[in-house]
Image (cartoon, helix red, strand yellow):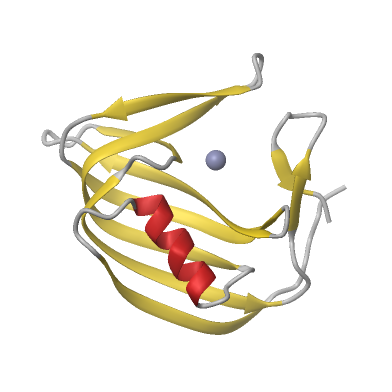
Length: 143
Ligand code: ZN
């Protein structure tokens, strides 16, 4: 059965992250600061290094790629919800190398901002709570 909550746009912010900040931690910090517990995020810009994950569905573990070179952020899409009572940003990124080749995955801490313009939109609605899902092994929305 699908989980489907009606949400209503409440507030939104646009801005720029500090050069040298950690992309995931900076976005999570902004959500905590603005008390966003339900929302969505988008961003673009560039990073000086990246750490992105891929979930191995058989092993049920994340593997991570670290890319120690400058990359463009073509897209970052994410959502904001609660896990164990804490704000959690779940974001995926598509990044491009100098020659335009793209790589992407689950955004992990360890991705360093070169320049990043973001938008965070907060919603009103019943909270979405993450808990461990037995079918996938992932912390998915359960309610
Ligand atoms: Zn993910």
